Length: 137
Image (cartoon, rainbow, N blue to C red):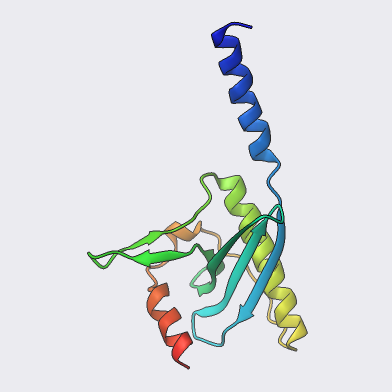
């Protein structure tokens, strides 16, 4: 096998591996804030956890905000995030389904309407400030 063939095989194997990532666990901690409705942690393939996702009640419905940190200039930068829309949708669907299940267990049954817009186009919302408030109360 020559170098271009090896590169093609490598590229194809990377693409195939990317499609096999599964979300094997979602944990939800409900919050009763105006916009911040829950924190979530997700586990990929029973071996990698991402904590700090947030379920936000936005103007277009519920959406999932990725974990982020505040930068020196006051803006926020995602710490971890999907790099394609298919994975973003997979994460959002799993988290919002788990959120709805937790609401049902708690005896609260509002309809979980998913936001029509991707999270990055949602209204400006200071999730870190809300998270800080939630941690204080």
